[in-house]
Length: 225
Ligand code: CA
Image (tube, rainbow, N blue to C red; front, side, top):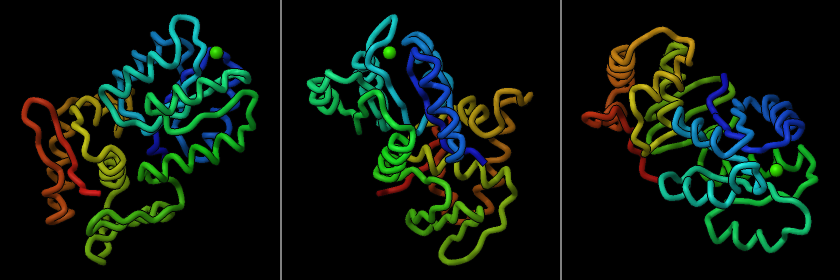
């Protein structure tokens, strides 16, 4: 199950392909943008757990995108820059980039960096066990324990809970949840989300109180870290 969405903003198709091939082995879901315009469109559509962001783009530059993203979201960002642009590194960190990889890079190294950054940002990756308050999630076995008691969740409930966990403390619209959990080709409406959130809340007991309804928007899972 692919719960981690990563946006790759890079105009060189070859590089996007390589990143995609490796990242999919790690069970990441990759979305590709070749221009700044495409990147902004994709950013509107769903939540991402990470952005891989090239500096030199045809219609804008990575710094502009990074600045814009940082104003609204705290998504981890790894910048891709060309050799000889080492000064950019400082600018990147200044603007809040999480890491910085110089081209040409090895895909394996990038994957390792991605994992480190995701971990640092408490995003749950494959094969990990994560503890958030009373909730413990074993991602290898899709097992969830609350206060040491194992929960029987359907695959959809698990996916929905993981979506909240991976986007915790963020306000999520029903549309985003629908796209993130059910996918774009799902022909459903926003009531579907309400029904399933209601069911999930019931199933997870007091932890369900963490999933707050935000009137006029959607939901937010509140977890102190
Ligand atoms: Ca480029």
